Length: 85
Image 1: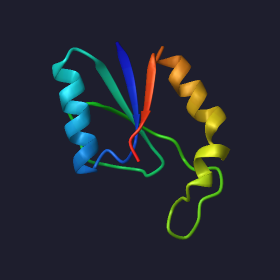
Image 2: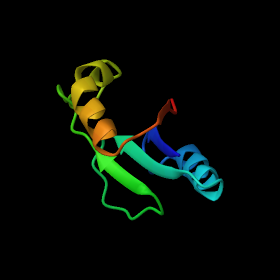
Image 3: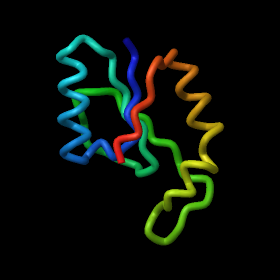
């Protein structure tokens, strides 16, 4: 099963969820608005927010980025999307 998590890949809970899902046999991809340079044991995709703020993004950014997110999900044949926060 291909599962997407919408969260920050550096988030402790996100890493735990992704690891547990991978152990159960799922292919996991984490989608985030924040750019990252760290290496993670799961695939990560950074989607720039449509209207970035000084602090990065706000929750309405998810609404404005929905088309970009949907394209990425379809490109990877994602079966389930889990917004972690």
